[in-house]
Amino acid sequence: FEVSGFRYGLLGAALGIGGVLATPLVAGRGSGLARSALVGGALGVYGTSLLLFALSPVFPMAVLFLVVAGGGYLGLSSTLNTTIQVQVDEHRRGKVLALYVMGLTSSYPIGSLVQGALADVVSVRVVTAVSGVALLAVLARLLQTGRLRAMDEDPHAFDEAAEDG
Image (cartoon, rainbow, N blue to C red; front, top):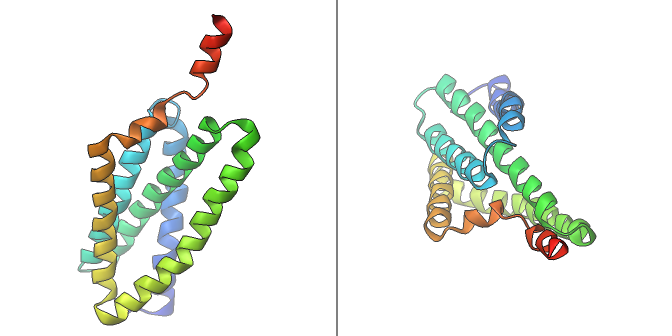
């Protein structure tokens, strides 16, 4: 979109607005749904909304899809963080979280460089659409292999059974 500085800022703010709006939903539903369902749903929402953002013909529609993307991202990131907190033993949790955060914080600038270079060759819309499709492909693969189900396992169930026996 060829927009003013304010409208460009609105695109960036839309992700944050979506995250804020999704917070009560994620917090309220978080304990009632399986973590695998939350991650699968959030990843689907995030990928689909990025794809629809890239295909948006008008600016207001693009802003709306970025708001939805922000909600999907919040649901995804908070559920992944919760899963680590719940499933990793307490004495390893700090190290695992450090690796997790390092992976997130280093992949963002690297991904931005790659996406920026690709956008120069094709276009920002194409790169964004491909990113959305890639997220949906990852989701399809996770569902196909059943790897999301591991998020629902109770890592302490064996310990508790051993204590009872």
